[in-house]
Image (tube, rainbow, N blue to C red):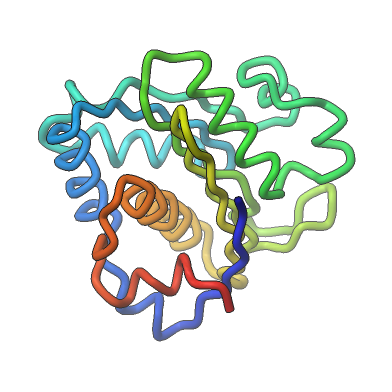
Length: 190
């Protein structure tokens, strides 16, 4: 399942910090005996780093895959080359394949993925700065959310991408109030 969303400046200013979202996710994983694995592209490990700083991360966080290039996505996570050619690396199907590949390559029970353009220029496939897709997979369900954050500075875009992935995971695990009313903007169809 995939969804599209756009985020306005007011939604961004009210979102709970990535650190607090990560703490909530790790706590929820500890409560439910879940283990997290990540598959990151544009955020280059920031999601994993954010999770690793939480109390309980040694139990709840399995590790992560840093797959910055299309070749790495294919070799490390099994993302089909044809999919990357036809859909580009910034697509819901690619985010799902990344999350599902990470889950298959680890003993984790939940996988989070992030792919997008958070640098200072559009990618080689024409995806604009600020386009990000996050994914979440478990053994029974996978979901991806397409976000258009707009042309913001790279550090801000990376933190927004991490926050979007964390909100998706919290919702995927049943935390419907994961970041209060403002988080619903990440997961609502607009």
